[in-house]
Length: 168
Ligand code: FES
Image (cartoon, rainbow, N blue to C red; front, side, top):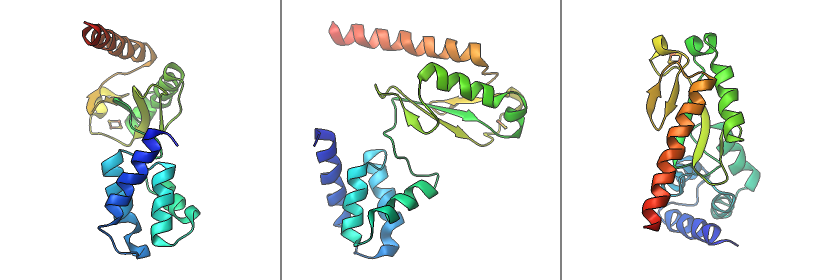
């Protein structure tokens, strides 16, 4: 087991101490655990199922049913492509495809280096700027594939600076 898996189990156990073993506590437990870990790892879900005395698949089904829960760790930067009506009409799916290709991940996933996670959102209230991508909670307008490259380039520069300052 990796250090991260061990930590997930330990932290989940700590949280479980505050709850009774009632199935009705499943969602509040999942929310607390995700609040602590940033997502719901396999180890955390197994701990929760065991604690509540319910099948693992029941926990997994609830986690995948609700959008609020994540199965992958969050990235350092979050990328949320708006697929509301206005953004959809202005090519939101093309933008989403561009992000997927550039980051080599799918919707709901995190890059292996944990630098970015990618997902979609419904209208974020900036329809006049469609297609919109929310980058680290900041809506950016007219994000077409060429702009995706520009945003990534800016992050690459920032990362490079971080590397240099860490090594100096
Ligand atoms: S539909 Fe995307 S901001 Fe409104």
